Structures are given as structure tokens and as C-alpha cells.
Length: 247
Length: 247
DNA sequence: TTTTTTTGCGTATTTTATACACATATATTT
DNA sequence: AAATATATGTGTATAAAATACGCAAAAAAA
Image (tube, rainbow over all chains, first blue to last red; front, side, top):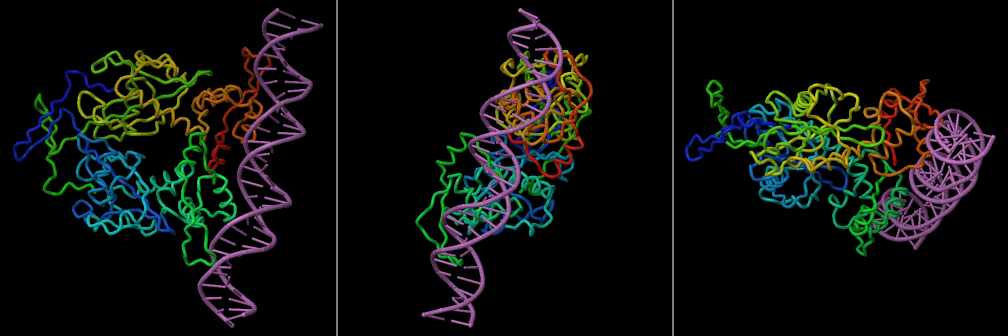
């Protein structure tokens, strides 16, 4: 039960006029942050977006975008605000996946973080002025991260693997149109396993969520491949019936 | 980035000697609680454990066990502590599933709650002195709950449905030995669908995680059914190979 | 005894997953 | 221009799994 007894209700004081303004509570409160694990895909490898910390603690270390929650925003709104402030990425559909609450995960004070993840196209973050400190890393290039962000990354990867079996995440990670082999590479990169090309083609075609497009990209391959586009309508149909991708 | 700039680091003041002791921060902090959604099973219906609030707000309303997090405990430790304090349930393996952060979910102040769920045998909570305010409700008996706990319950149920497809939750919900029909009823109650009895038997037997026991319960049925026990060893084998229950 | 209900154990059929063969298009090489 | 290499498109035969359903045994109730 959330039982502040009445006599225990804390006083919240806002002396924000003075220089040593303080917010005071009868009982100690942790600070709360939202972090964003942003996944991208370059056609070969899964990537994550990191920013280099400019201040202590962990100054110079790489970490996930994120920051302290305001009192008038939800954790998700906070995640999206911080993401835009630090990387320039706007209107990203982030999804909460875990709250990290270890007592000593931040050396400054007690801080719990509510971690979110999202999938974006690499092109969306390129050439952004605000993003000079933000940088994509492939998973095997990721250095040792600030705070407990190594742990957070492991948990985010597991979440991504779960998700790809229930929803076609390629929607968000691939360009508008793509080759079947690119889609297969994406699934292989996320799940860490290899598929038979022909069976993958058959399974995807039978699902019916892909639409062929006329456009033919001249890429480095020998035979000009069919380009596809995700069919969001068909996918919505499938999802309403409750389907699951098996791999 | 979690960027308190250095000049902004808040002062944490503990005047706990005085009667109006206050914990003060340079920036406002939300309060943080942990709540527990405890599921049980009576052989027919899924049940949840609720406690009746003795104080405002929502005095008299039913709510999930839970309470404010201490500075020296994780969210999970908090959940387990509050669960024991309020229901007498000890050593329950709770699992975090979502943080609820709506700005106005608590009328007292900004409170975010980290919700956990667990599965227990009904017998474990019976006849506990501390639990006089705690009561089991079947899902269709659950009244309108305090705070945003109606929403929390819906999300917890979805989590339970997901989980039962990856792990044999019967381990925790059923008595030590049980009939196959009880196991089937449990799955049907959680997932809300009916199975063919014979196919369910075949599938479960083929999985190999059930062991027959000699004990024969004389129940109200016509033919004396075989009693089973979960084989944790076989299950661990299966799990290490990565399996999934399909329904 | 007969009937009713729940249980145990099976099998035929359909559906899905898997392994693998072969032809085609195009850049590169000869 | 012909041969080669490589990625592509489209199949099919087989194995595995999911599904539907038949039938008899055990025990309480009629």
C-alpha cells in the first residue's frame, strides 16, 4: 500500500527565489532519469547511438542519451525530450523496457533510470548540428560505458531480440524500399543466427506484409533484385488476428 | 546524458534531528514506490491479492501491496519488503514489468511506481495474521482500484500471458502434485482460450517436464487421474536449449 | 445393471518447417 | 564475344508438427 500516513505527509517547499533554492521533502527521494537506447542498421550491422559525456562523473566516457525527468512530464516524454536535445532526433517512438535501480549506480546521489529503446533509420540522425557529440557504434565497437550502461545495453539487446519475433522491426530500421537480402541480414544481425535464403524468402512472401515496388536499385550485386516496401495495412490485419514470427 | 553540470549539483541536507526534518534537493524529485501484483490460482480461476487502504487517499479502496522505496534498497527489494509487511508473504520471487509515471497518478505529490508481479500458491498466504487486510479476488470480482491500479492490472495480465508461453508458470501456481486437467485449466484461465484435452495431454507429455507420481487423489471425478509433479531438472535442460511453448 | 462423466491413449489428416535443386540476370574475366 | 562468378528468383520433396477426433477404461450416480 502506498501509505504515507497523514501525519507523515512531507512538506514540499519551493524557495526558488533564492540562489540556494531547495526542494525539500520529509523523506528522502531518489532522482529519476530516462535513458534512450537507439538502435540503427547500416545494412550489415546493428548500431547503437552514444554520446560522449562532457562533464563528471564519467567525463569523456560514452553513454546513452538521457537525463533527469521534469515534474510535469512522463518518463517517456522525458526520454523523447532528452533524445532531441542531445541528438537532434525528433518524434521517435521510444518504448520503456526496464527501470534500473541499483543503489550505487550513480556516484552523485541515488538515481534510478527508466530505460527506453527505439529503432531509427541511420539517415535520420546524420548531419545534425546538435549531434556532434552523438555517434553510432556497431555492437562490437561499443566501448566500456558510463554508469551501468553496459548492463542496460545487454538488457536492451535481449528486448530487441524478443520484439523482432512479434513485430516486423524492419519497418523502422530499413530504408523505405529494400532488398529481401537486406531484410534477411537485419534479422540475422539481431538474432545472431543464419537462415536459409530461400526459406526466408518463402516465409516472408507468404506472410504477405511485403509489397514489391517497381524501382530497381543498381547495386553491386549481379542480378538486379526486387525491391520491397512494408505493407503496413496487411501487417495491421495480421496483427489483429494475433500472429507471431517464428525463427 | 545524465548531466547535472557541476555547478548545478544539488545540496542534500539532512536535518533529521529537528521535528520538521527535511531532505532538500536543488531540483525537484519524484517519490518512488514499488507495487506487487500477486497472482494465484484456485484450480478454476486466476486470482490477485489486494489490500484495503486504511488511509487517504483512496481510503477504503482496494489496491496492490506496495510502498515507498528506501534509499538503501533496490526496487525489487522494496517490493519484497512491502509485500511481506503488508501480506506476510516471504521470499517471493517478484519480477519487475513496468514503471508507471503519469504525472497525476497520485494526488499527494509526483509519485512514480515500479510494478512487479509474482506467482504464488494460494496456500502460502492463508491464515497469516498480518494479512487480515489482504484478500484474494478472482479477476471478474476485482473492484475499481485505487490510483491507476486498474491500468497496472491490465498490463500485468498481459505480462502473465506472455510469460506462460516461455516458462511453465504452473511451477509456482499449482500445488506440488496436480492432475493434467488442472494444468490445462490453468493455461486456459490465463490465456482465455480452450484446448483440446487430448492434444494438451500429448503436448505436455512430449515436453517431458512432468513426472508421474504414485499418489492418487480421490477427487470428485469419475476415473482416478494420474497425478504429476513438475520436473525442474528436465525443464532446466529444455530451457538451456532455448524452447518455447506454442499455444 | 445401466448410464454418465472424466480420464488415458491412440491414429488419420492437415499444416508447417526444413533441406535442397535449378534456372536467371548481370558484372567481371578471359 | 564467350566464359565465369555471384547474387538472385522460384520451385519441390521430405520431415516435423499441429490439429481433429475415435474409442475404451474407471468410478460415481441412476
